[in-house]
Length: 89
Length: 288
Image 1 (cartoon, rainbow over the protein chains, first blue to last red):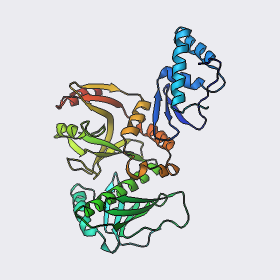
Image 2 (tube, helix red, strand yellow):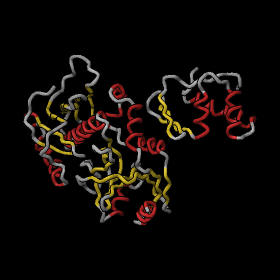
Image 3 (tube, chains in turn orange, blue):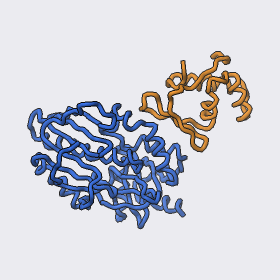
Image 4 (tube, rainbow over the protein chains, first blue to last red):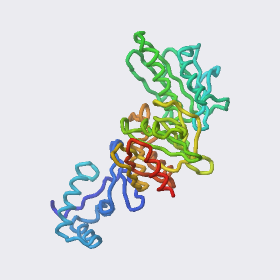
């Protein structure tokens, strides 16, 4: 995956954050997705302003993980979000 | 919306009264046994109705102009057609039946659809007033404390009820979880019963348990958001409320926000339980 892309969460999605966890109601209103701690942090960063490389930097620093590992996990995670139709484009 | 009708029966669930009329006596006799159960379990009421339902033969006409707050639906169910309309502002509605063919199941179908309509009328009332929701669950009262055990079919709601005797079983299939005027969260029995009958009573909710049968007892606290998601999955939003058209009246996002509020302050757990009453010891120890 190109780490210079700027994925953005869909603007018409309904999502709520409580106690550091995020729940997203799917666009078809029939599914609920819950994100764990790190997933929630990535979701917050998917605002279209940050490219994947910048997000990987932030996650790597905040969670004290090697950047190469974070980049691989992040690419897979974003691909999953895209498959669930939670991202623009 | 409705013409003046003679009130035939009044019931009460969670402190809210509903009148049910039978136009020209249609199906009143066949429904008598259902009301007999409701009376026996204490759900008859002499209160002032906040919900009104009329049952009649024939078709309920569609509203002349589409009104966003009027829910109109047609059901083709085995040997009957049902048309129904419910005004979600006045909480009044009608259900009309056209019989395609009369067979021994026809009365059963009419009873099922009428009960579903009553249930959904209450569901509209509790949700649109931000009061409460029905949960596919078993409700138990132990002393002054209420407990709600939620789970899909086959995961042990009736088993929990059987193992909890001689505690009071409110209902082993559908429980009302609601707020009262003081903001307390209460569990109430409903007449939409499973195997153990029902009790029209309530108690303060001390915990919600999402159950799974197991060879061990285990209690794991869930976060508020996990509890809310579980409740949305196990909660009773079936029947008419699950159809797409309902989104314009009561969108999922509003439901989610409401459930977040309803569960605030109520401990939620995932509970594995053995097939004996020892899970109560685990629950009580956790409370201490």
